[in-house]
Length: 346
Ligand code: NAD
Ligand code: ZN
Ligand code: ZN
Image (cartoon, rainbow, N blue to C red; front, side):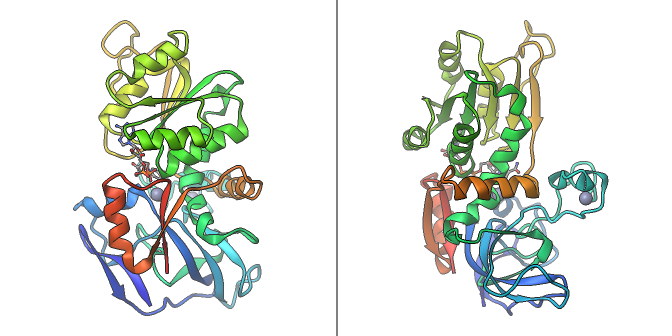
């Protein structure tokens, strides 16, 4: 089969590899679509990301079951499913509590194994998936459902984590209206009555933001926080979701979070948030403000996203590429041109 692999640090190639073998607890998924996440670019461009072997990329995958292992009871050939991102241990304290995105097995700063970032992922014609990491999408179009696995689920988890701040009428800022951000806006609309203020460097993405339900749209830059404070009686936003995570976006977040508000940072662009403990010094955060990072989401978060999609509350903007055109998709994402999510279709 054909697969998109990171063959050595920074080098992506389309290669021919054998169809994966499955074990007793696995299914063989015939891939219908695999989303291209900005994290894939971080992985490809980070020469420190050395896997012990070439790795098939793709951690945002949907498809149909092509074969099941001897021990699999709940899935049969032809079932359609999306693949959960967090291949967690299922046994540690956090996993047992349902926080499988925060599996403790890998250690304090690790993330659970994710397909495409260790085990082979889904930018291929077939993929091996342990059966317990499948979530049914029966009746949904798998091509537009693939990004539910990360773009929507990670946004849903970040929002859920900040739920207490999202009281009706409060303001929520969404920084970065790409794959994750355009889902976040729709999830906020569907699950809260907050006033949504979108921020992006690209005017086209601000148009997308309004189309998906943002009440206001602000161009990113050094003045963005001033504009946001102007919209919020000078107090700031109860929740700021940063789906960029560079110095500039984190600086905006720090300057527009309200007293006792929360900055929920999911973007992984490698930035640092400026913080001073005392509100009147340096980048003084208002009293009580919280900074929180967030990784992926839980299996129940993914199920919630599937349910929201089923009810028409999440409609992902998808740009389709043939699997063999993966490098063009990478280039387009890199140049900031993708609207919503680029999805590879084998
Ligand atoms: P994307 O490329 O689809 O979207 C990024 C958006 O941010 C684009 O619309 C771009 O115009 C905008 N942008 C860039 N710089 C900006 C700035 N300074 N201010 C405002 N907007 C800016 O990316 P994506 O796939 O949505 O991923 C977003 C980030 O989230 C990436 O860093 C990715 O690695 C990370 N991510 C994290 C998790 C997690 O679990 N924490 C999961 C998935 C993705
Ligand atoms: Zn991702
Ligand atoms: Zn665990």
